[in-house]
Image 1 (tube, rainbow, N blue to C red):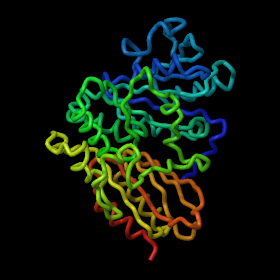
Image 2: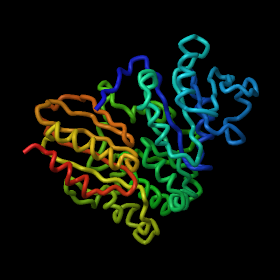
Image 3: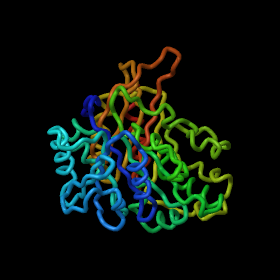
Image 4: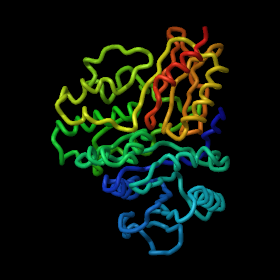
Length: 366
């Protein structure tokens, strides 16, 4: 597992995704117009009628990099994202461009996986940019139908560190809670909140540190808590699970007991399960198993992340991966009054939970 570089002076990157019409561009416009004091480089892979408003532009240009009136810059990705990021860094170091962070708005039909992988694959990019978070916008009115018909939208939810539900005012409480429960089923590790783009706290969106392996930025202490902080009221009746429970099994209790809603009949291709254990892992066996798993199931693994309890190591290890790219960093020491334990979540496309669970159990130290 390759350790992540130091985050000092690295440029944070937010990936903004969501299906067509969900509200990505509306959110991006607000970030550019209201997040004062920060210069942002925006990378769009769709630059046309749905892109940021022309009144933000200093000039209508055919150049790839366009200056905006608020000191930000906007790029169109006609070629390779990796090349665009390197081009931006070169211009920034030469003093030709000034920006403090990057926001990448993906096309509505895009799987964000390849965009995320860019920050793992190239050493120059990995050393210069820090992937801060994937923010996914879901349309409350059309979200259920989109999840039913478009598997790419399920992947967008699966990759998310934050899920923002737009157009909340267009649906009733029953339908909203059903959508929220379904999103939790697909991705139990992401926070979920309704969003009014005129009132959203932008710091909660662009300063997340949700996609980070650096030791100074520990994993969210609520990560994989027995009761997710955003959903505790939905789990009041949930019983204690085995250490390898499925985080969707509480759905019969979710949405305030609206079992009659059609959500319960969905069989999403993207799903998640959690592995928990109070026993320590044998580090060598675990690394060998995980290396094999990503070779076989890497294309189907969207996100995986966890806090690991390793034998012979007196601190937690922070573990994370995207598809076949995997890394780990030392975290905080285990406290004297703290019982060390492992919590891991795997989010992906029809993953064989039993194979993962059995393999991980065999990696536990005897």
